[in-house]
Length: 455
Ligand SMILES: [Zn+2]
Image (cartoon, rainbow, N blue to C red; front, side, top):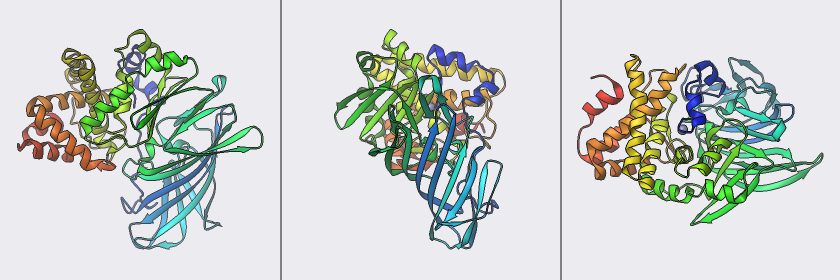
């Protein structure tokens, strides 16, 4: 997700918080798969979403339906709740039969046809439409549309990071557009009225917040390097420019795979230079703003943002914070890994320059008396300072941990943490335990001082 470094983003970092809100900040989100009465924090687990979305680019609307397959984690589960943003629910069906539902506070609560028992798998089909103001951005002048945080604004789902699921996504678009989404494109089917249905299959379970798609009249450049095909999509850049802008992607992949001890999960990685001000990682692709492309063309070293977003394909997308209170494990980690990549690519001095900028940002928050623990009690209404802590203090603390443990133990711990939790959810204690295991040292003092602020 978003951060700084380009002049574009630096300006944005200074925007008032209410403006930042418009760009889609992790907002209060549902507790995973709870029953609609909130009686259980994990009443059910979604296994699969089979969705069809038709965005109206000119009308800034979405029309969709989604079949949600879930397994009950309790006995006598009578109602289920899903996040639905500001979408209007038209019908809810189970096995074709209409079900009672109500919507309240951006959730759709559904009465099941009969209570589900522990371990029982059920399917609910929801049809909906809306004019989302967040979660999806429309650019009628440029015929572009893409998704951003958060998914429940365009797809009814459990919008909590620890309920990972597979996805079959069918997006209906005008014939002249090029599109990318999660997983593998399996079919394109022509429809009446100059429309095409694109279907992607995402077969590895992923958190719903990295579900998404982007479409526009993009030029596509592909480069196969090793096992992975890299794709670059943009409207306002030539093929040669796109190759230059994304020249280092293969090197980043190799570096992150080495530091993670885990291979990149997909067969393709797509970077889109899109209209507007996006900096959004999704599974298998990233949407970046066009000024990023211009910035890298002007200075080949200014690839901070591309490196940050790509690192999320390991830390964030695959090793995912269990809930937003541990968000620093996604974003502090991505900022730190970006600095580590910059060190690999441009040397130690450049790494230290990045770390110093994180430290300075953290210091400003601390001086203002707004320092906090990196694990939040309740990430409901984060301030701009809270976000600086998660992104910049988080990265700085990982740097300090690296200094504390030394190269060998730190990277050994990082690899075992990433391997152990790849495809799973993490809390801060998991990172601490992996680092303690790798170093044979208690890190209680370090974590108390820097992470929990209890010392
Ligand atoms: Zn990020």
